[in-house]
Image 1 (spheres, rainbow, N blue to C red):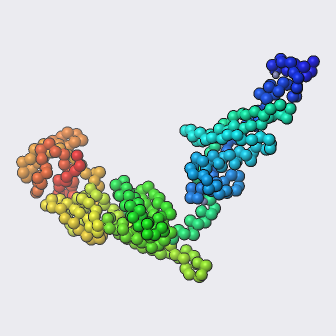
Image 2 (image 1 turned 45 degrees about the vertical axis):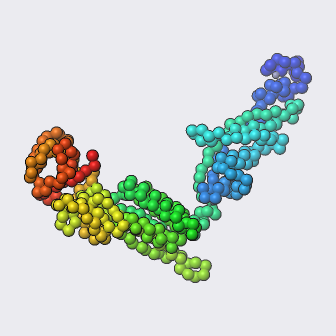
Image 3 (image 1 turned 135 degrees about the horizontal axis):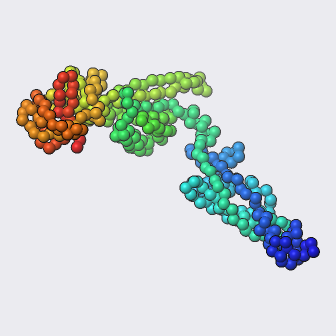
Length: 358
Ligand SMILES: [Zn+2]
Ligand SMILES: [Zn+2]
């Protein structure tokens, strides 16, 4: 009886493979057992890829990141297909929520007695990590020579400040980089602050000076010797710290004994609104920077509704408990109107009216 009928499908057998008909042998013996998840590391700087322990340079004909990932994955899979007669006839990449999957069509036969080769499809999970290859790590380490640090004193940058600085830096770089490639920073990082790293100290100084044209920064340059070059010259790293004042636009400060609302930062100047006479003027930023004191942050200014005005009194409604009360003011500016929301700040024993955003 042995070898006459297939024990799985019951068919009469001409060729037996380990007691089964070729069809049943094939369906119970896939070409490949199972592919473990493939891991590939890519250098985000030069697009070299790492499989196993080795880094490989991408072939020049590759034009997209997906092509590169697929190329690396194919190479990695080929290494794990041991049998010579197995062949990858097709490979494609699927991008899902969890990551990538390589869809693989492999041609071969799982036993030499099976008369014809056939194709089986496999789905191989793929993880791609972005990193720096040793060459790029080395290169970056050597050329990092200058950093521009944008900060604000005792506080994080506001999102407006952050975006303005970042946009301005990008514009400046786009404008200047045509003349000198080294102006392009190696890295821009930070979230509540900004660090811009350059390979050239000249580039860092140039970008810092450009930034000073639009913001009232306090600037501090420091130089540190970080080593000796091959010719015996000291290698230095420059740090340029650009510091915005502790107060920001919208805050209430006292300056030269008087209260002001900060209206804007300009080139070397700070525009202030006096709360004593409601006149606007610009002051040199270094002067305001060193002598101003924060009284109240913009977000802490109390907002009230103007109910009626009978100079020198104004009837106000507290927007927290809807209580109406009266306050005396030496000056009632014209923008204080019935039905409007205004800000109230207390400095010492005096109360001032402040314009606020609706
Ligand atoms: Zn069978
Ligand atoms: Zn690299």
